[in-house]
Image (cartoon, rainbow, N blue to C red; front, top):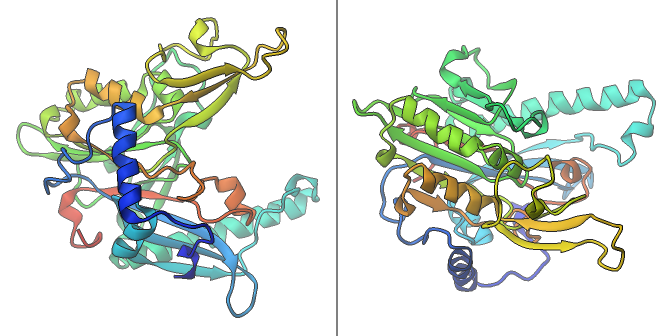
Length: 366
């Protein structure tokens, strides 16, 4: 696959692995060498993807390609993609979103969006068939992250039971915003299409041995609203043996910066209801020479906050594996769906799939 050939110089596998260990120690994350995955235990089966737009080698036209590989990347994106690479599907002539789409006539805007929806649906169906055959598509349901639709931090988030959604022969993109989706059907596969927000993929069993698996979207607003804690409480109420849980934190933004009109540590910003003192790694004024400019730039450790919330729920470090591939790092492919849809950058993550360990026969090579 030519889209994996990056022009930037890549550090060696050993150097990247050393970076991973140093990062975990610096951020006080669980040691990646001392958890369930490294000991060969069964946890959620997680497949991540790349979406790339690049010139077609023959026609020169833009190409939209989705490639799949098995996690964990282990901080070694290129090496692990080669080792666990599953394959790719390609669509020629896919319309890219123009940079000034909204300046086009409304009818043309609608045409472009409709054309992309049709092409994207076909592309995803081909990808799923590549992963697990024609029967896989019927079992996949994709969650719509709630972060873009949910601003009130004072009420609980939405949780979707994938087993209540009837199969229709094709994959389903559920339109209801939610922060969590779960299944107790060992054949059901749960997907999410995040950008740089970490996603928590989990599996476990109840006291009777009945399995459960799913995904939690863990962006900073989700965490600030207590969604990770709510998710852990829900699994407990569902009867899941919390000591049986294995949690896989898929690739995401390792350090993500935001600008706010106030310092989130001051306690006077209504957008924050939680204490972030332990997981804000950098806070400074945007314009220190102008005392009237209160805009503050801060860097947030979303992965670390999710880990802290799981610790509070009784999850141990050995139950958590962090794939520390940084999707906000140019070396590993900054995940911006908007930029990728315009052909501005490659590659980007497009989907992460989670299945129970019982689905290994159709989901990969582990």
